[in-house]
Length: 420
Length: 202
Image (cartoon, rainbow over all chains, first blue to last red; front, side):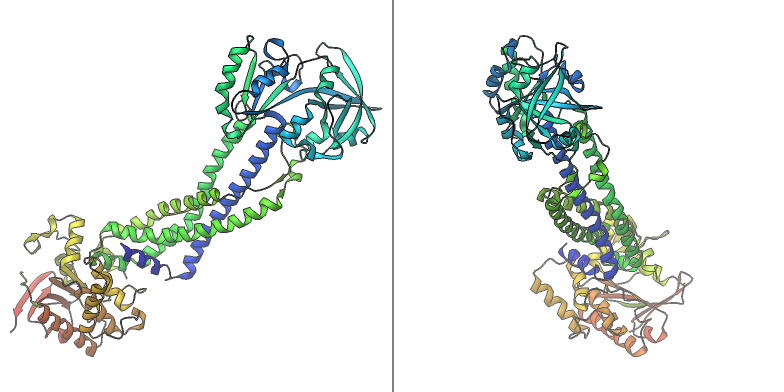
């Protein structure tokens, strides 16, 4: 069969321009797929990271009822520990479960600041500053001042929010809120830092205060709205669940707690899962489109070489060998095209993984507290992506080549020899 | 009609008389709609496509009017292509066989030329070498001299004749050139698909 390979290789030099066009078409398709996959991985990675940081952790422990009232920022369905003994003891016990590396408590509530002629809605997060620094490196986003410290009556506010309420770091702010018991209150805090997130919605709405302060003003000692559990690898977070279930069935009598995996129970994540599957079929479609060029070229080649095919039959080549010969010709184009496309795609993906692509304009008007989208995406460069796209290209191209190759193999030798 | 081993037979007749069809049927490229073709005693029409390909591969060599050489292969490679199909010996042995046959047809020195660098006569000699290299029992040549001038035509027929004597290969070739047919030791005349004359000469 080696001589068929050699012949196929030499045949490609018959019309260099035609061969080159086919190679370029395949290369372009593979390039597009490599880049698209790199970009989508980047978008997803960024979204997942934000989703984990701002919303879900790797596993989130909430009150089951809270799931339905979350968007209202309800304070009536909280995590108050096992049998009401407070979240601290619960955190300790959860931390002792194998695989759990960190437990991050948060108490999220709605609040307002009154300006002269308007009320500005805000989102308050009572946090454990040290845990948050460890978890999401929150201190890196403080562009002015410092992070809040436990015990102090102080807040860090989003840069957009500060601008909206016309305050600076160092000034004081009076925050209005309602407690779970329905009483409407106000408290004054020192602004000690400015928080700059790449998610515009967070910049414009979010402020942090020490968890103890939040519990005090809201009259919710020992309570948080959620506990975020962090493991060594979010892809393997599910493996921690059996240990957690065991702990909860042993310690918790109420059965009111819900453990949510970061990639389950969130509509958007499921939507992304669906989108990724859909994109995979689009990739295949792009390559098939490029294959039309190649299949067309090969059909022309088969027509041109009809007499030669007849001669090969006369020499005693079996139909399968003729099929093989033409399939190899297409496959070689597929291999060269896919390799070129993968290399080009790899280079561009690598460049944009450093430079990033700015989508700010596209996100104007989108509520980014819901979508958790960063406006600048960095493509993900991975060898796995290149190998995947190269293999996909070679496989699809080779399968597509079977169509013209079968046409060649099915030619009747006498008919073929009669061709002029 | 029966052709014996080692015969050098010409099929003569005007265009459309059925020369090519007859050769195709003898060469297992086509099967008859009526009657039968036996090769080495085997009924050809009872063989599958794959078996027919194997018969052609091992037993029959073809020489075409239009040479039908593969343009991207050199003279050497065109000949080598035919033997690679049946002979899986070492590279050196294949090379020896190919060069021997190229020498026999007078093409030594031209083996690395591609078909477009060869004259019509040289191309046809490559085609002969390609048919002969696997030492088939039967060689079928469909108007092998039709595209050649008389000098080259005579040269090609001489080589075929020489191979016929040296290797005892059976040759059946068609022609409508009266000059060529005088070389044959058996002469079959076709007219409207029927044999109108069958003569043997000493």
